[in-house]
Length: 143
Image (tube, helix red, strand yellow):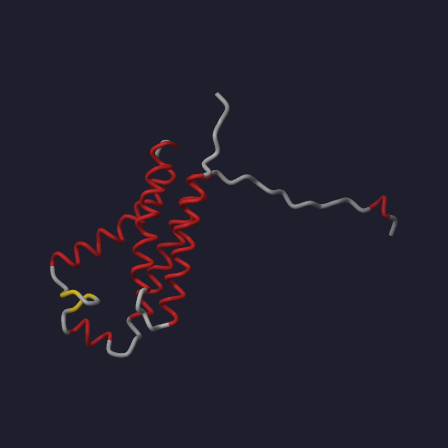
């Protein structure tokens, strides 16, 4: 075959909007949270802890369950907010909440002996750091 007849077939690299990137990162974070929590139920003795009315080390009551619900609702809302908010507010809300969740992820794995949970915690930390980095590097437009 003649080299002149070969056509270069380069794959198109479409630039993805930063809002979509941030939203996708929050989706990944939520999926990691969900899977980690599901697998956590398989730890020996975990069902008994739940039956005993405990949410981790805390009693499962109105306050602890509402607090946990709020903590997990924020990343879910960030999926939408990352797409819909104006750039300046969007950037700072993404950075602020990603810093908060980086701290939450690190605190969750401190003293944790189970490798799968440490693995998820490290992945979650990487994702929140990527959110911070992505939002921090928000492209600027010429005025």
